[in-house]
Length: 351
Image (cartoon, rainbow, N blue to C red; front, top):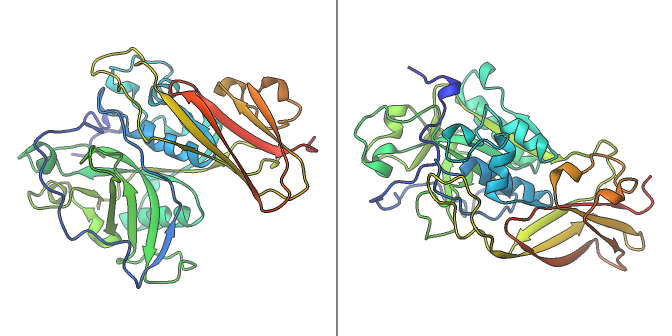
């Protein structure tokens, strides 16, 4: 029987031991006859304790794409209303609190309507459409419970066992053709779950071969990951920062490392000690000769959703940006991993 949404993912994101080698036969995104779309989102390494932080890392990856950094600890605290993080209900989960968490991080999002899903083909078509629009997409997938944990129960697992950010789509058809094709390819990062010490954590599968029943997903020689073929899928697309005046220009943040150490301890509710981070902040879409203002906010409570210049006093820091040529401007900033760095850039002449 399908688990209820309230019982989702007691096993979500857990890491097993005695892992077997990565299987061969996954789709290859470097195939020369593919048209390839890559949103160029670097993979990140999730914390493994407290049922895993895969949902948190997936939204952090999307947030970096739109110009903001936060810790896995803060992402979970935001999603769960500060529920103690050792409780499994504190997780950031698709179909439960993902849209709320994105909103609290001042990100716009579109959830897949799992209640109206007709089949998995339609779900993967939705994933494809949103990735091709340049949106980070997070989806729930099956883990092969035998290969992860040597669990011999063919129906072990939940509605989904892991949350991953989708980065790319490959197709032998023109990318302007948004239809579903069995041989289309989806590429995602598993946040280091299978081989945490062997980046870059990428997995690629053809749409048709990616779909599996729970029994097929747990087959001894089956794929490491798959998605439900019974029309019960979960996903969210992050479509941009909240900006009701449509005045912001794109900002992207990259981190010098893709992890946080030390990681939180299993069963602990305490934030681990921070580590130093270097953020590279890139503002793009600029016009030479036009003056812009870049704002950094160190809490999401202070981030406005409009009139950024009028709310300049809410920013923790600000910079004046003007370029003579090109269309982008870059700076680096040192912060601690437990800090929040949410950046917004607007024309200085904006109201």
